[in-house]
Length: 329
Ligand code: TRP
Image (cartoon, helix red, strand yellow):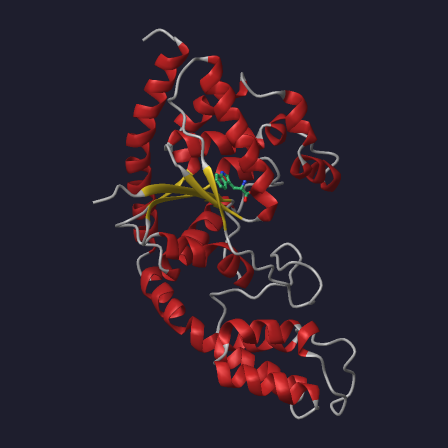
């Protein structure tokens, strides 16, 4: 028997998940469970770096966890938990901060972007964001971290922090995590221009009703050059077609690809077909979600149980880390 590697990934609590979250992360989280021991964390402390209010925090955690579970994350195999339920991570963050060069933190593209977006809230936590992320990973001795392109510099930085920690204290306690590049599907929003995101309100929620889904899909931008029904379209620049390629049967994709180019099929029909296929694809997800929702406490129970298991791992690692530094027992 080979020992499985350990995956860690975190995501900020953004409430109900959308197609972009699903194709960019959740689908991959589910698949990784077959080959790795997986730990999936809802990073509520990271969220505090940018949130204006915590009014919806608990609700957002609950809705996201519910979507993860309905999508096929198996709490009996994987650990699913809330970051703040394992306070050791704050200690690890502080210990790591002593070997982290400040100049590099403020040079990271993600940091620069955030201060541009939010010039009035450049807080200390924001600077330490990648250090807390590194703490997440090393606290559970994860060796593999699935990330998209936007998080890749953070992971590279995490590896540097680990190396300088181990070097400074002459130890090997911390594991340098490997990046597992996920097939990055950049999912565009219904505007067909920007990345799908809740804050831009250009998203399609997984948990929407079929009717709501139809409505959203009807608002999707298609080939902007195609103005009238009788104009031929170009599927290669159409966001609806790129979705068909993911959710529709092969013969239907081929049919649309041919017919759109000779105006044999119109955008309305094409969207109706996509929406029907999407709704069909999401049927089992929605059924499972409704089932879990009948006992909302079960979601919190799963998260608390995950925290218990996570704490047990973290406790050992923190003790080893303190010892490696030379802190008194
Ligand atoms: N930084 C990630 C994001 O903004 C979330 C995150 C926190 C994370 N800790 C992590 C991702 C550890 C991977 C590993 O989306």
